[in-house]
Length: 535
Image 1: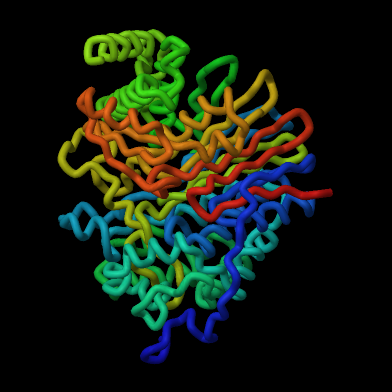
Image 2: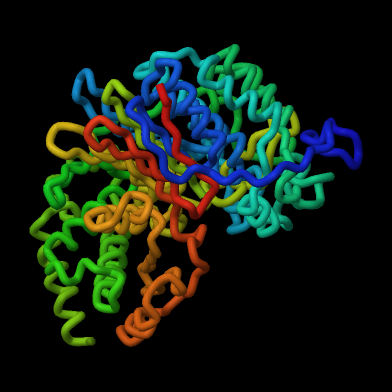
């Protein structure tokens, strides 16, 4: 236990450093990685440079993100992946959903319990998913891919403006929870912008994971410390929960075609169906409606996003049952045509999570999304382990017992992830994804549509909007034409003005293959970068 007035990560006064300006777009003939935090991108690029494949690089970046972007992901969260294997021409959806603990059947959670504290936590799946992916589809050892994360935790990461702002936003909850001792200076104040933030406790945990293997997280010393911490704070995760290791499930991706492209995306419990429905609807609309920099195009886009999210809410399926569903209405072109006609008629009559993408020189591709659910998760962390627990208890259904995501022992939470790999002909062209809860699919759709007329970086950084199921349109208003918000309001939408390059509206990480060159783009809405080996 740290001495009074000193936090576990405070063993040395962190020096101030000049802000880093991440490289938002990069090109290389030898592979490419983009992540939401530049040290993680460097970890992935380094693995590629040493002959690792896309899976090796993605796993290295995922571990590193848990260190340098702890407010969004980490060992205490969950991870899902889309993987394309060039040798077998196989595309896999790796479902790494976390699970509700067994003892949830004997307790009733208040709303605050679902959001904060040890009871808000589901069984973390990230170590199991990353270990599984590496063992089955990678080429490097666990020690080698974890080493960059260990170094980052020991030597420290720069505190960026974004991280400082998010820490200030969650300051009250961090102070109240056990995570404050790790993520606040002296347990009370946010670390200043430019400070070097070290995590020696987390470095030891990562080192043990590298040495003992991911099973240690569920069956060994790390597991013992999680159980002791949960027991001491009235948490619900016990030995039996961890012993049933949440290895990922390999699922068939959802597939659709759009403008000559073939998309492979993530099905239930993810939101790939929503992405497909949006693209199918847009594909049945006249070309003039696709320009959402105009009032008419913005209204059509808002209607499309809203309708697809409503359909997803109304057509929920258990991920194990979904492959047996014959009438997959949301992903059918015929249904999209009907919806498109309805939207055209309406126009005439009425006027956090993180993502990374990797491609390697061998042709393999990974799109990976991972999260601890909300910013800083449950705001709780074991003093002996140093990572944040998730708060995925907030992502279950609590009213309808027939709902596939109703909270019960070993249930998986509802997710909005949609990591996607896109082909031109037989060759992977694009790996793409985003954080942002229900804004994930709308962010991806807008980037895909803009790629037809914009350069890659312009398509990712362009102004963005999202429409909720209740008709609330959030948009970076200062970057859209000023006649667009009134046009949305006129048609009954509530306009929610967001800052330029808003954190709220997703953070797309994209890697594209252009002939023999890999191009990576990192969304400027976070601290990400793109990088690939130079030789």
